[in-house]
Length: 239
Image (tube, rainbow, N blue to C red; front, side):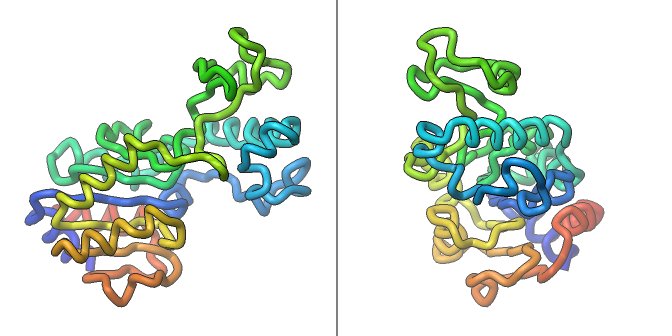
């Protein structure tokens, strides 16, 4: 199957990859459920809200300090490096990601639409002024400009997705003749809509995910239960 994917990539005029949480599994980021301490007593989905930022700020800040610190201690995996290499070789034209870890960019990927923002970018919730990661990791730090609360640049529940990234993702989807899903359950819109749109426009659809997705039956190629990193390395070896 990896040989087939390699052939399609080489024959493609415009290839798009869309990644979800499964893309970063091999980077060693900790799982929410295996954690102890403060965040073991909270549902992460309840903390990923504007309401938590404003009214449960201590819990919100502690949770995202932990996430940012964990991220800074991890690194892109070989799968991220393969995708960046394909872009450099002109094989891959665009990456759409639901992830906020910034690993694609850290691996050298240039054309990335980050639909849910970036955990690495810190700013003031009130005035929007950028701040250093170190400022956010210091619990007592507030915005030096207006005294507002510092936060990561991720999209919280209750906020709009970044319009520029959505538009880029839409344009890439409309242009592609090969669309590859890596590590996404395809349950969250609008990202879940892009693969089917590409398919309806005549693109080949490939899905690599640990669990079945609702679009597996419509895909041209699937890798059920496969390691994303292994699939990418094996595919790269055929190219």
